[in-house]
Length: 483
Length: 141
View 1 (cartoon, one colour):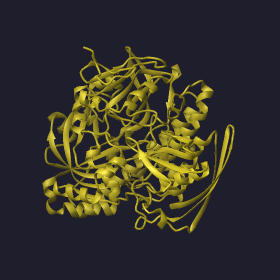
View 2 (tube, rainbow over the protein chains, first blue to last red):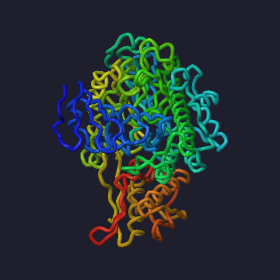
View 3 (cartoon, each protein chain N blue to C red):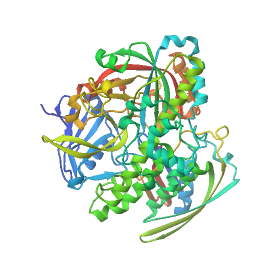
View 4 (tube, each protein chain N blue to C red):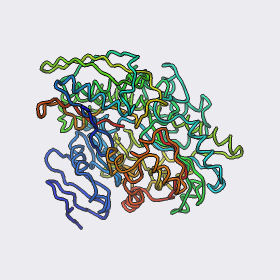
């Protein structure tokens, strides 16, 4: 079946199978561009995403295709929701823009062992305590203040470092990607300036689309996976969405600028400066990888510390309740992974920018207790709409190097959202729906209005129908702390 | 007002205008800091920071300048409202020196919208348009 997309342009998408659309290679493209989307999502797709997919497909050493997940939108160089794998032995590149500024931004979810209904009239009190206890927004600093040598330890150790310092439990580490510590991190590759931006920020949510939510499991789709993940309908969950803060931003900024100047030296033509990259096997490429992995550890440590703060809040209100980490995923990374290409195992550097790794059942990287059902994939919605817990599938490996979506994806600019919604009335409107919003910025809340995002239910459904991951549970927010 | 925000799918565009590139850069910096403090006029000039940067051309210089200011905000916790920029633009090399004035950021007094992560090369332009200089780019937030 091949249906031409109605919105015409030189290189059109055509539907190669249901929910899979392709742009054939033209011009400098080395591989096709491929997006997983329903017709509704493709019709609403920004033309820039198509252009960016084609640009990424032209980068040296790219393998298979340049992919976009169902929540894709216009990013820098690479689309947000973009996945691209590069072979280091065939001139493959690493790109700071392919990872994003907020390196290792991600989501972690805790089960609480209690039902949301048990919160009763304490919802507001608990939400307020979370708001007071977990640093969020701009200018408050984080829970932990470090010296440069201490920060170096955190950058080398990730969530493991945090656990050693008393933040959280050793048992958490099994349910964090890479066991809580990204190997190959080189704190010495992180500039002094990047470290200066982070000394006071470990244990802080940040702002923008980052949040801390209390959620209720509204619906279970897959009983077997839900049982493995210890989820049932009515359960209270806590979810954290944040990243590597100022350190990651500075590393992204510095290497983007550096790659712009070194790319021509390696004979790389850049159709867009944001695609700036260097060969994986080059001094600059290796330097970035060492720094970027240190930033992954920074994000893992950050979420570990925030998780421990959340536990403190729960201990104050519900002393017998034990928060158990369900899983922690990062969605802005470049990771070296083995994937099967044309029947052969190859080591590839997979960029996922606004995309989540989604290993299927049986994969050695999936914690033993989840290995039968696949890796949990945590999808953040908006403060007024659902989030999802998905599971990696066996098919996902052959679909897009074991990758899935990461959230709802914006459909409306912040500037426009501010003209359509106002913070305070929106907070009242959500309160009427039973959702408590705690924020340091009313303007920021307006920019994050649920209506500014794509339909997350459609994104999750398409991710399942396209075989990227399958739906395990739909969860709804009941309280949201916004940065 | 010689600065404004322009639309981008997920982030924010900052744009400054002026009769020289330096004035346009100053206004672009104000557009950036308006995300951190809604009322720029209320920022007291009690702290002064000096900034110097260099790039291959005016456009990359704008990105470097805005990123330098974000670094200062994050590491020194100072919010700026006034800028004095001087630019030397030679072929293949553009240099900037600036004085940024502001005060320690106080989340109780400075109404922020969102924390900018970095200035990007997206929609990046420093050009003369309709008789005035425009300096703009998208900022990742």
